[in-house]
Length: 246
Image 1: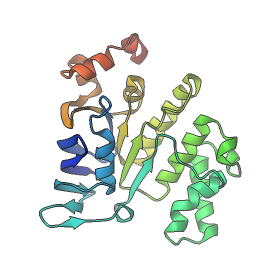
Image 2 (image 1 turned 180 degrees about the vertical axis):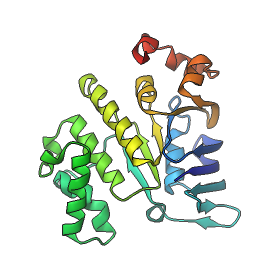
Image 3 (image 1 turned 135 degrees about the vertical axis):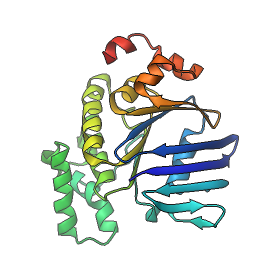
Image 4 (image 1 turned 180 degrees about the horizontal axis):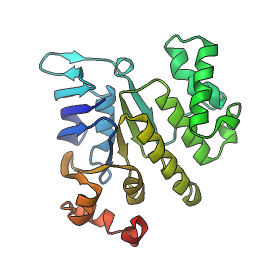
């Protein structure tokens, strides 16, 4: 499934004006300073914040267009979201957290739990199915959150700083898990991150967003060779980033 969007939207002092395309199976890393409009973009795509002007098309399905007054609610857009804090239900077991989306769509409990266990197995955490979120490590929580987002077969996956809560040791393994999972899922994915290492390890393409406008878009190698954006240049110039990627 692909994403094609032309977006103009305003929220407070933030004004978005951009066009964005993400191919099927492609992961795009969105970077930019605080206040650039990254969270507003995610909310527009998810249907939480309305467009001022433009259109959003996911997998060939027009979910919002101001000219024709089309605006599908979030539940009808088939979008998976992993929040910065992962937002698991603290009182539910891992398997119940993962099964929640299917249960909300009317799937019987037994079927939903069986599918949830299959996803936990794919992400290597089936042995933790009966654990509560408070009993899991940061990396394990991330795996459960990913399973919960992917189990419903989303056409678009939105990741808001998915690795930021992890410590340095857990982060390396989580990058590998995230990269492998996204490749296998073949879903269009937009990942917000402030960490160049996360972007370089997981994404196929980088987009720099500054003051609501895209200032650079390109493959990882293109952006390393010519960042163009001052913000992106400073981000990629982080000490040791070239050696780390190599």
